[in-house]
Length: 304
Length: 241
Ligand SMILES: Cc1cc2nc3c(=O)[nH]c(=O)nc-3n(C[C@H](O)[C@H](O)[C@H](O)COP(=O)(O)OP(=O)(O)OC[C@H]3O[C@@H](n4cnc5c(N)ncnc54)[C@H](O)[C@@H]3O)c2cc1C
Ligand SMILES: Cc1cc2nc3c(=O)[nH]c(=O)nc-3n(C[C@H](O)[C@H](O)[C@H](O)COP(=O)(O)O)c2cc1C
Ligand code: FES
Image 1 (cartoon, rainbow over the protein chains, first blue to last red):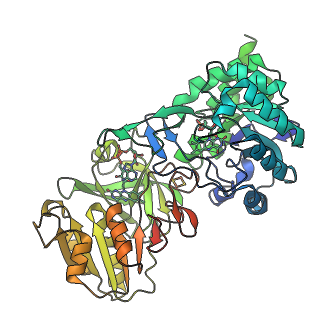
Image 2 (cartoon, each protein chain N blue to C red; image 1 turned 90 degrees about the horizontal axis):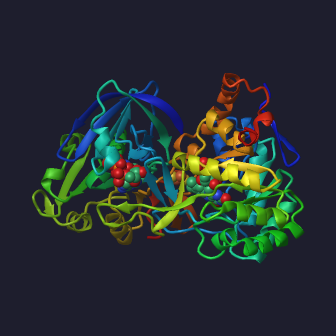
Image 3 (cartoon, rainbow over the protein chains, first blue to last red; image 1 turned 180 degrees about the vertical axis):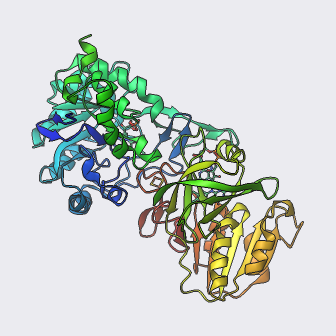
């Protein structure tokens, strides 16, 4: 049984990649299990300068997931390259994906340049869809012209394959996907979190200090699946699917919708061993549906 | 961090709002100030609770019923299995204290019981100041009495000193080298303003409880720190309120 997939010229043992922001810089999870079982890792969103992020509370529970308004807390790209990636390399023998955030084109460009020289990074994921950063981030993710401008500028300096991460908070996500492809993106990943809100019945006020936050977890799965399906039809570059994936069956379904690889986010927070367990369950799930090679099911739903 | 299945040994109310749950697991360990994340049926996120005691494979939590999850916890019966992440966070550093003062506000007294027992084991009788809104909210009085010198304050004066924890502290003015506190944020802030010779156990809404999501990150004098990983116990002078 073959669980391996090719992603942007890099062979992954399996398509399961922890999603950015739910796995830190990876090495802390090595205390829980051997993270070399992972296909790859998408690292915590990194910006040019260090960021503390938004005031607490930053987390609110939902019936089938959670809201977060972290606001891209990270130590800044210099420390990420100089310290976090070094710690990761000690425990992770494969290559990871650097996730880059920002609030203006120049910030994105400079951050990406730092990662050009990082050997244990095989691709850059450009987060143009963070709902939790006041300026930038989101605007880049909702306006196809603005997005295209940013992506072209980054593409000019980026020496590694460029993945563009799309926001679901738009009327038609395929418009943004096409804009990304036209601007030179090598792949797209989706979905980032859906904007949501919770109100504390005791105080009558929103739970999150930022009032709104990004909704993720099992509840978003059907929405994510539909968007991956739609984007697969709209572009010719690989699509990385994510949003609510919690089981090996979810992985198969997401790949049938058109995902060449998948990312698993909130499931890691709910169960620290989620990715390990999903990977362990993949061969059994494949056998159940008579799948010999995972690559053969990518986009299967489109041939029906 | 450990991820394990525990068996509920007992689950009983101590007063109108506070319950005690004892959980059994082979070789279960913990240190005072550490917490667990308990999986609650039909709740997406686990709930964080300080360890109120842990010995001979049995871990105790004391929980106040405040919302959906804690309400559901009261329905868990003896013999039920529950999943939990244990040994979370960095607890109190009690090694250098010979004249400890423990200050608990409301349900914040929970982790202090475990700490008081550790001191008692070393032959040290801590002063334990417990602050409540009213006498009806008091729990574990006998247990605390056994391991330290208990002082009580209540907001309405129904028992002990009338006033808040800090007023009581000024009134009783016990000698101490280090104070160890857990309770509502205003209490902790007031204590930190009063003296920086202390350790505070903080709360935050958590996404994971083991350091992965940055959901619980606070600002300290030495940069951002995670309540679930670098905390929940912080030096009083370290926290920027
Ligand atoms: C390190 C730590 C130790 C704690 N120790 C204890 C203890 O020993 N005894 C005790 O009674 N309580 C303790 N708490 C608070 C306890 O976690 C909350 O009261 C509990 O999660 C409420 O759950 P609920 O479903 O009843 O409330 P709901 O309001 O329905 O919960 C909704 C969501 O908000 C979160 N939440 C709500 N209130 C709090 C809070 N005050 N702190 C953190 N998260 C919250 C819940 O975990 C859940 O994810 C501790 C919190 C932390 C962070
Ligand atoms: C706590 C948290 C932090 C996140 N941080 C980032 C981030 O820094 N960069 C990013 O591109 N996406 C971030 N995301 C979005 C996830 O990578 C993912 O797109 C989203 O959560 C949907 O997947 P899921 O339902 O499996 O979690 C974050 C999500 C969560 C829950
Ligand atoms: S709760 Fe996730 S990092 Fe602390």
